[in-house]
Length: 253
Ligand SMILES: [Zn+2]
Image (spheres, helix red, strand yellow):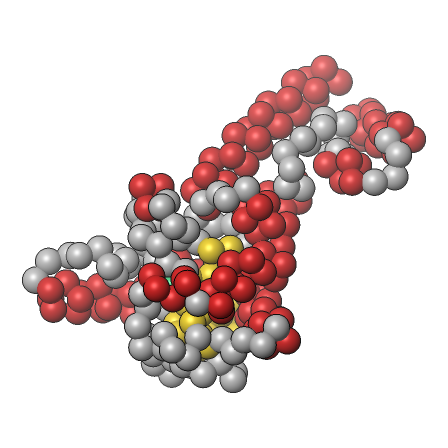
């Protein structure tokens, strides 16, 4: 163990010496195996649980989120339609959304939150009601456990004109264009992009923002990815890295 630690330290010193000061160094892990994926390893390790993929194939259970993930009540966000009472988001997302709202306001746009955190139970009731109302499951309301709103990391954000109707046409508004172009700077992605329904299982939703952190969001939005595609990418990169790491450590024994 000591020998391995010493080897790691030596590798780090060598890397620091060989690589000129700059971006490349942060992708080099402590253990001496290079991390080459464009999103840093500490982001992929996801200790804050902000990269979690939620969809019909990746359901949250009814007890998620646990107590540790404190919810923060948003204020001054206007609408609160789908969620009665307080508009809640996880603290990390709430702070980022407030900054996004401030950025929009500085650019001359006023945004409103239509819906944020929804519990498993709320989602269950919404899905039941919609299905009863239509006589069949139209898919327009996610099943309980399949909604990103349960993470407390997603918010439906609109302008005043579209406050009563979440429809695709919102995507043509200046506010929606601003959100699409700037959301990554605040750590958000457009979770359900246009023409990605075959991947996400959800039609285009220009209002649905999902917090993943600035680095992941920037990579996802710059490359026009879905969260599904991004997850598959980083999981493959991580598996490859861990295999290389195991081989490296076996060598050191
Ligand atoms: Zn939504």
